[in-house]
Image (cartoon, rainbow, N blue to C red; front, side, top):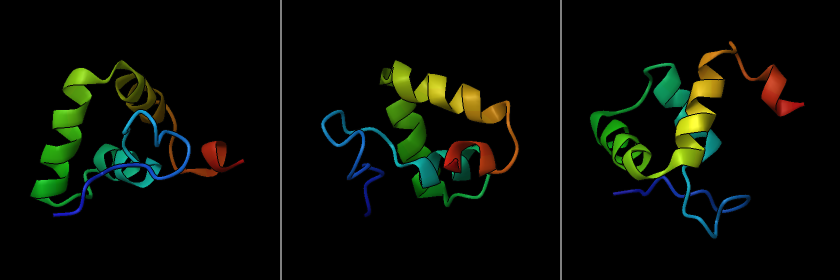
Amino acid sequence: MNTPINKSIFNETGCIRKELLLGYRDNNLSADEKHEVEEHLVDCDLCTDALEGLAMISGTAAIDS
C-alpha cells in the first residue's frame, strides 16, 4: 500500500502530499487513500488547517503560484 507521505516540504513531519489533500477535497481518492488521509488528519493540525484552506478555494492555481 502506498503511503501518503510528502517527500519534499513536510518530509520531516510525515505530512500528506498536496495531491492527496486535493484529491480528498475533491472526493477523488480510493477508499484506501481516503482512509489513510482521514487517519492522518485525526492527529495533524497542520494538515487539517491546510485542508480547511483548500476547501475555500477551487482549483490549484492559487496554491501553484
